[in-house]
Amino acid sequence: MAEVEIHTGHHDHSGDSFAQTVGVAVGVIGIILAVVTIGSHRAHNAAVINRTEENDQWSFYQAKKNRQQVLDVGADLARALSTDESRVQAIIDKYTKQSAHYAEETKEIDKEARLKHDETVREEGRAVRLDIGEGFLELGLVMSSLYFLSKRKFFPVIGFTAAAIGTVLGVMGFLA
Image (cartoon, rainbow, N blue to C red; front, side, top):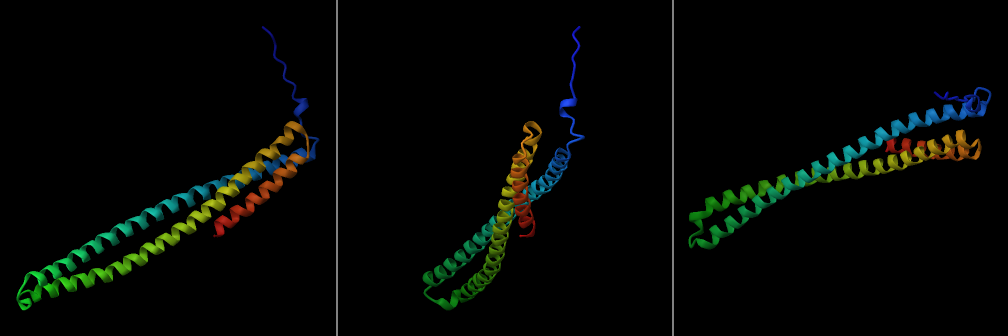
């Protein structure tokens, strides 16, 4: 049986302090990347939830507006079909009162739906910043890791720069 010989001396970085620094930096970039990725996912989920709640409010608004319209038509029909409006005045008053109630309710629903829309827009903006930050951090991680294959110092320089940009965007995403 043939013996397999593994040479580990070629990849020993114990004497290469720059390689150790790059290795630690890659680990730190990985940790920051994980945090930004989780934040990005949570921002996307929050945006979806807010959008769903906004849509629910608009559906509720539309249902109330439909009821208001039906009551308005009912009051108009009662007026139009009666030769003596005093006989149907109670129905007209009832329908008019209910219609006004729905008109007031729709104002509140409209306000809530618009607030949910604003929250959705804010969360989507956060998600975009976090996504772009995540991309830069991934780029930084890969570029920095290329040092171990090539021993070229410009890879960590590019990687650290990309990671710094990603970190700033990630922080901006969390603070937004």
